[in-house]
Amino acid sequence: MRGGPRVLGIVLAGGEGKRLSPLTQDRAKPAVPFGGNYRLIDFVLSNLVNGDVRQIAVLTQYKSHSLDRHITQTWRMSQLLGNYITPVPAQQRLGPRWYTGSADAIFQSLNLIYDERPEIVVVFGADHVYRMDPAQMIDQHLQTGAGVTIAGLRVPRREATEFGVIDSDASGKVRGFLEKPADPPGLPDSPEESFASMGNYVFSTDALLEALRADAEDPDSVHDMGGSIMPMLAGSGEAWVYDFSTNVVPGATERDHGYWRDVGTIDSYYDAHMDLVSVSPVFNLYNERWPIYTLPPQRPPAKFVLGGRAEESMVSAGAIIGGGAVHGSVISPGVRVERGSRIENSVVMDGAYIGEGAHVRRAILDKNVVVPAGARIGFDHDLDRERYHVSAGGITVLGKGTRAYL
Image (tube, rainbow, N blue to C red):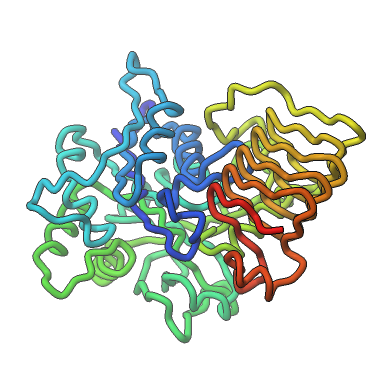
């Protein structure tokens, strides 16, 4: 960072994302498309780059081809200034084995730290939807002299059982790190709220190296950042919490300030899309002062013909709404919607085709799905379950390249 310590960013992008299947059937979770033009990884990379962290290694492992391709084609930084974003596949530097956890992924990639010699290492997850200025978190980390600073999201105590929970005192010093506790501790200033870990960490380099080495020597460890490293550093008194609600992003509205979504399930992924499309969106992609970057598709503008229309929706470049109607939906590049068809409250990815008179409701259609003329999706859950994947919340999902039944 300019005038500050040397910072290396490490993005953990090796997640398999089983709960997002079938969207992860052919790709890593961080490579899953989102919001029409983006991939999930674009959000963390945009936050880091906007926050002036511009030397970034992305650790990949599971079905990483499309993720690696997206990073190398999209995220080209200025070599003149020494900036880079590079995918780093599992290298088996410590023997013929893959990563056994997120901490092991960094331990097996310590050459990245040795080469750059940073004073601060920022370790962020790759598959959340949010805006955050990491520079503000780094500033607090330097002020407290912590070994690690953990980003904490305020959530109701009753919901915190699904997260790693940070137990901190009134000053922000972490007393314990609890993985999905049955009785989460409340906050000193708000007893009915808890700090859920966002999976974002700022480390002093020496503290990170010492913790990773100790963890690697522990045969009983699960070698996970949240499950192993955070409890270790909390126990030694080196951990502090960063309250995400205090993070101020330029251009944020009162409505989307502090927005963060873990899109780890089909239902949460769907809900995050529905947050985008209202007149006053819960998450505003149109914030020009803190843009989310990606590679724009090389396609002509969207076209509406033969009375085609879209309401409370996002329609990407190259889409043709040819007489059909779209409501409350996200339409990705190159989608074709034919005469008399209707799409309601759905997510339709690149190259999908919606035939004449077809109806799609509360569904997610992956790339190149074909919905033939007259087909109906999302109206009969029992029938849909026989043919497709239906989530616990009733969202019908068609995997990449599926041809729908009539």
